[in-house]
Image: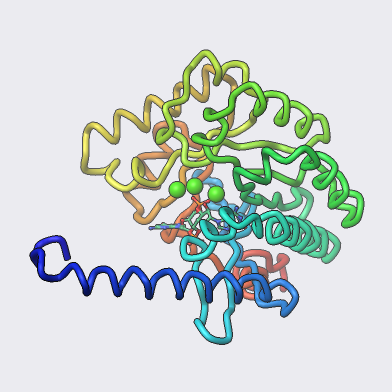
Length: 282
Ligand code: C2E
Ligand code: CA
Ligand code: CA
Ligand code: CA
């Protein structure tokens, strides 16, 4: 659009108006979406790269909008975040994911090593004063053992307000849950802070995983993150595993757990359960 020339200013401006109107429409629809029960969670398995066993599931929200169809989170989470709606949506996600994990546990899925569930926490959720109470309340209400809940927090958010994050994460960890740093490698963590952060897991961003089998630099970065995790005594998870070559590289270099289309796309709860949680003999 930039190459169109100066006479196109009017078109450009008209487009921007349309965008603003559309945004407002989307925002209004998003406001109704919770009450109308239009959100749904899909679950993507986390896989032990050595054994192929499923060890957990990441809950990923989708918006089933009557007017827009299935909307992916990248198309509404930013707006939800800006408008504050993410607080209620995030609480719904947390409640729904924990209730689902508890239901699977009670059905006996996952055998003795019960399935962990991971929930993404948005920046404004983490920064709210009541976040620890919200999480504690959901654990109490659903009965899910805290050790089966993992919260994923992006690296940029943690680094933006490090002192506040340190305090929040410490209090969340006291609940007995696990915390992972999502999109690790994209947010310039200072090693000094990383050492002090009360987290359990580094989740390698898929932009690095993408080319590990072909790009020496990305391969080196991923190896470095894996050894960093080992030094800091953290677990490491790779996201965006799409090929067998990537799986093998990660496994051979000491990454225990991976997630990605190579194993499965995120699936609706029922499909996830039948694909990944069928009991032996079922
Ligand atoms: P994320 O937390 O980094 O989640 C991983 C994203 O990568 C998901 O996209 C997933 O479907 C996708 N993915 C998984 N495996 C592969 C793969 O092998 N290749 C590729 N190319 N992509 C893969 P999704 O579901 O569209 O979610 C996008 C982002 O939206 C998430 O990124 C997360 O930041 C955000 N999000 C999703 N659900 C929630 C939520 O409940 N709350 C909040 N605050 N954010 C959420
Ligand atoms: Ca995530
Ligand atoms: Ca991620
Ligand atoms: Ca990512």
